[in-house]
Length: 444
Image (tube, rainbow, N blue to C red; front, side, top):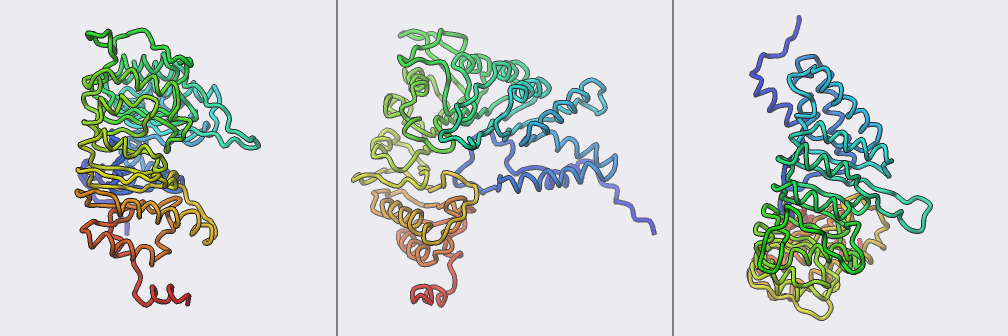
């Protein structure tokens, strides 16, 4: 007997394929909500996604025509060879028009994870962007392992051609741009991006090249607006600003002169960032930024080891969510206090799996984690409703410590505060049977 697939409307096939070939939340132009659903974006999850896509396009010609759109809309590029392969496919598609539309027109997001990209690979990125006129999100997480070196190699400079492509080919659609510490834009190129991309909603940079020790300001351009005190940089659509070493903020980044200069440029009046609601990182060298824009900020993320946190919170009267990077944990002698803060999340510096002996884990993770939660417990936070510990990466194995979780779940529950894991599930339901806890206490 011959079996045939049922004839379904194209829209239904597209819905089915999307469940298989898409990453949840792949088109979010805002930074991830620390209290939203957690999505596994590890290498293994990415590899499984690519495998699913390969299967879909290889079944038959009809499936290929539908699935190829999903394969192109979100590009996750981990090797230079794959980058060159995609670029060749986009070039050929543009030249021969094998499909209803060139493949690059389907692309909405690009994620780069290439180890130490060569100059040729960097230029290939710029060429690829010229085929993606509908791009919404561009994230550069290229990296260097620094093998055999006592220090990591200096960051690469983002080629000017990449900025040119972002600000010409997809200037109307691009809304989220991120560069990590291994590849950073020059100051003139960053200003060019501000000038030509009016709809930018999310920006993440760890550093900027080209600003001297005196912090010279760039010449005014179209991104500047006339003001009584002189031209001022205005970013009308920017809601999320992320400054510093991704994903945490070292002391070096806090004293970073280019970032200091950028904050100084944006600290003249509140209308320079009228849409700002989230800020990751801060600069104690230029506190005027929070003094000017703090009343608008609803979410802030920073390290927890700075004694400046009480001062920071004092500039944020409408703060709703505080995200603390772990393992740093020292507030000094300060006692936190805030009237509107509803949510506190403790997140690891890295979400990559880390395996260490239990004794080391207890000393280096569980002990400082207990101190951090104790500091939150004695804080004056009358509006607090949720405390989340994101149990991934460095914090993945905290569920192997049931006594710790039970103690703090009961403590927070008495106060009416939900104590939850990475998925938003209460730690109450992660606790083992009472006999298991008692055996753990007895050492059985």
